[in-house]
Image (cartoon, rainbow, N blue to C red; front, side, top):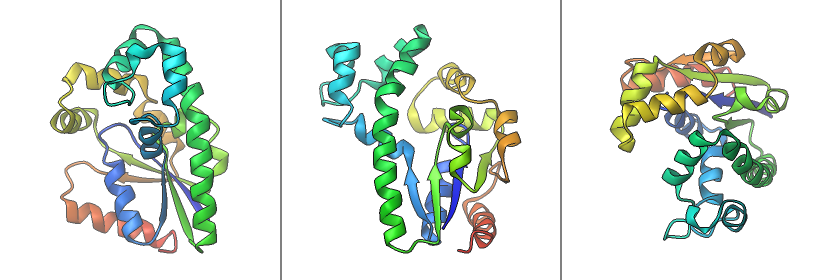
Length: 199
């Protein structure tokens, strides 16, 4: 089974590309979705987060108060590392379970959606190829502001905390440039890349 590591900066269109690959027959393991699940209402990470950071970081719905945690992590860089120490093992366990299910189901291509592939270091030797979805920073900012309600400066701070565009491109085996592409044109580009994955 071919293992693809899919990555890209916030607002690059990575989730859209993942869905297109899944539509073409790839099995998808979405680390972001798993992370949201374990930090969602009554998720597997919530008790540890409350214990380590305090009950103030749990929202009324029982999930992680993301806005509060984001502000705390920018004020105290060690907070992000401490949060990742809780979340990453849980994401790893669920990812392993999904990989085993894909193998059992006979999947030929498995795509890992890994936002921090370049930053983590541990992922590169677990995938056969790295696919980067790329676009200009201004495009990232505009997309994220439009979909999330964050301010441009907040989005730029998130981008600055991620691996640089140059580092991501240097790690890439394949690049999809998602700059100004209509949906159908992006779909065709993804389909072309997918052929090389046996899809």
